[in-house]
Length: 320
Length: 320
Image: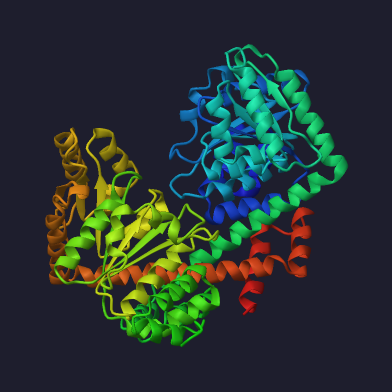
């Protein structure tokens, strides 16, 4: 393949041979959405082998990138391979922008056992909730055994994306407010593992106590989320974190919860695809001349809004 | 009517006779949503007479309630009648909670020319974007000539609700940060009239300048949003505010923009009803045994997600 094809089949083949540029192209297609993303999906869905996904979320500046780099080192020292997806819903830019800041990530960029990719919205808000599972599926189909999904922001979209992983790590820092903020943002509910990063700073004990108190107030299953301390920049506590991820994986596999989580994930993805398809149909319907008539009737008080909506739905369902 | 009926027709009749409790019941039905809200809608859509709606939004503590009370006094002094809807998407409570705080509103509660009602979500988030236009329609059908919609928070939902009015007032306070925050929250774009309330405090000139600068940066139509100064608690500047509302109304009516705005509103309401109806269908589909089969196939890699979604849509469209 001299000239890089846009054909998903050829791209997947090239990516399987280790061509990083082919993988990058595939990810761009997925990120962009639309028909080409669908083609990629159609080529990969039957080849998924069960990559294990780890989600990481937390406030900006909590050190998620450093922690990711540190985890990458641990994973490599165990001769495992790790793909990293950095999801940034708030940024319209992708590729270099975020990764350029990741000084500590530099050591991994030439390593065949590590793949790093950042994904952004490219304008279509919410598109990431469709693109992320598709991107994971591509990596899975290409044989990556571990996929770490790191979300950059702390909005609902980011939390949802990180929570859609098999194991979700929530990163906070020492300082009372941070744990409380995490609680407010709905992070407490999604955490399988808590990490207090930058644990060389003061306030660790209070933060730990705060998290513990909040955990006591919430209804937990059999897995009690551990609270770990790390200093990612000095590689402190990172081995233990990776160990805990393994323990949580074992727990999920044993009790059947892994299957349940993945079913829920498929559920959410399907619902999202269906809702978006229907939304498209509605938008297409809204532009039709019959709709304009209907709206005029509504304005003149000749039809009630629910009856008008029912007619619109009939119209939308007639579209294909 | 001794015992208060739940029948919208009877309730509307009683409300027309001036029974406030019947109106309150109608508003509760609308707020609760579902079939009874639809019935109310079906009874009122043909009776709308063109109530003029004024939206008011701004950060918590900016004095929206005081300004509303002060406006109510002006409106009454001109022998006009005013209905006030206080929309609080963040609160699961309704009725007394918010209005209890409204000390200055007390003078109006026994006045037949003023109606005050607060509406909250009752758990179904986003429900207010359906309930608000319906509530306005009820007040309109009952002959209220002016409806003031005040939103309590500053999220996207609140801004959207206030912006759906004929004339939208954005309230800020002296202090540079406030105007900037307003800009961030998307308030600048929706403002037809700016009010710097608590204008007896220092920083008025800076705030005015900030707003002016931000206005210069944005693309405006023929109406240049005026920036007014009020001290609502002392009734200062409130006559001028009400005058400006009248001027804006005249402007909208003359240039045909009022019709255009109301068409857009009907548009948004219809889209919302359609989307919600479809959402309901999808949720109903998700619980079916055929869907469970489909999901298992998807998990086993026997079908691709988009093909599965297409099958689900066919199923949903078969439901009624």
